Amino acid sequence: EVQLQASGGGLVQPGGSLRLSCAASGFTFNNYTMSWFRQPPGEGPEWVSSIGRGGGSAIYADSVKGRFTTSRDNAENTLYLQMNSLKPEDTAVYYCTKQSDFRSRGQGTLVTVSS
Image (cartoon, rainbow, N blue to C red; front, top):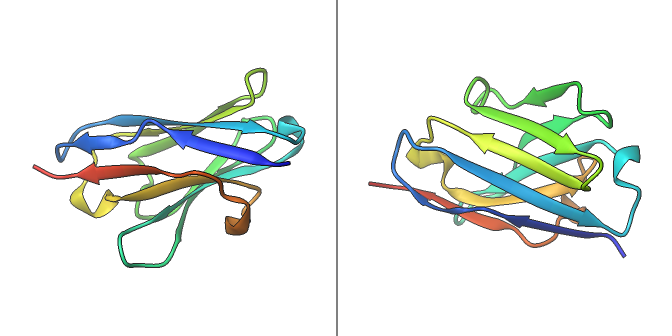
């Protein structure tokens, strides 16, 4: 059974930083591209970033490019999202997914950016 559990969210002031983690299990992690999505309150999901199997390349939505960095540790089956220069519009529940399939998401983590 595929399990994906995101953690590390919380309340942060505008301009602050957070690092999210996603623990993966139930599949061969290093065989798959992994992605981050987010879902603001009352809105649909938005793709944020994807990273290749080896972790050497990542792509980002324009809304987060230059502020967010995705990485992975294949030895620990863990995906990361470093978020800097956070803005109120980054407020959302963040999910990690297998490949770019939002349906594969597990437990998300809430990020609230507010003063």
